[in-house]
Image 1: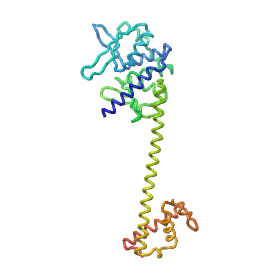
Image 2 (image 1 turned 90 degrees about the horizontal axis):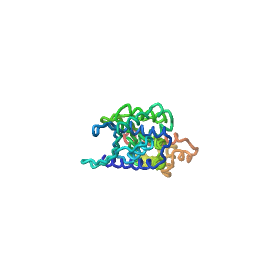
Image 3 (image 1 turned 90 degrees about the vertical axis):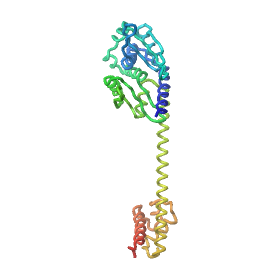
Image 4 (image 1 turned 135 degrees about the vertical axis):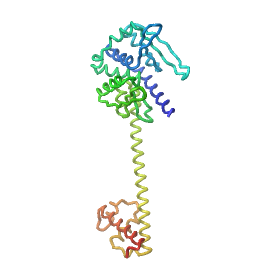
Length: 309
C-alpha cells in the first residue's frame, strides 16, 4: 500500500509540474477565479506577530509559485514567503502569508456569482483546485482522481463545477475531510482536458487506449483458451464413450445415424457442430448434431449403469 501511494503522489507531482508550465489564464476574471480556488480550498487564517494573516501552506512548490504570481499580477504586492521542513517527516512545506490589510483587498475581489458565471472561469477554478487539493493515481495501475476538501461545502462546490461540465463525481468522508472522487478513465481524461493539462491528457489517453486494447486481447485469448480446453475435454469424453460402447455392446448395434456421427466426429475432432452437420448426408443442423452426440453419451452412461440393452 505504501509503495502505491508513493507512486500515485509522484505521478501527481509530475502532472502538476506539467500543468504549471502550460498556458495560463490571462483575463483578470479568470485569474481571480484561479486565486479564489487556491485561497478558498487551500488557505487558512493564522496569527503571526499579533497580526492576522491568510496562510497558504503546501508541499507543492508549483502551487506556491502560482499563488505568488497571482497575488503580484492581480494586486501588485509580493506576499511574504518562507520554507519550512518538518523535523519528523522531513517534508518541505512552502508558506505564503497574506497580511490582513492585503487579505481584505483580496477577499473583496471574490464574488462567487461572477466567478461561476463564465465557463472559462470554471475551467480555471478547476485548475486551481487541482493544484491545491487534488491527487491522481498512476493510470498504469488504476483510474482514480480525488479532491480532498476540509468541509462539505467546499466539496459540494467542486462537485457543482464538475457537474456543470457533465462530470458526475462521488463524495466520501475520510477522517475529517470530504473527498470528491472520480474512478472513470474517460471522466478523468475530460478533467485533464478542462484544466489544460494537454501533454498529460495525451499520455493518459494513449495509456488508456493501450490498456483497453490489451484487456480486450487478454479477454479473447482467455476465451479462446477456455474454448479449446472445453473442446478437448468434450472430445476425450466422447472418445471414451465410443470406446466403452464398442467394448461392451458394439457400435454396430447403435442406430445408423449415431454410428455415422460417431465416425465423422472421431475423424474430425476439431470440427464445429455446424461443420459436422454439413459433412453428413443429408446435412443436418447444429442442434441435430448436438442431439445425436448427446444420445451417444446417454447410451454410454446407461451401459455403465447396466440400464441399456
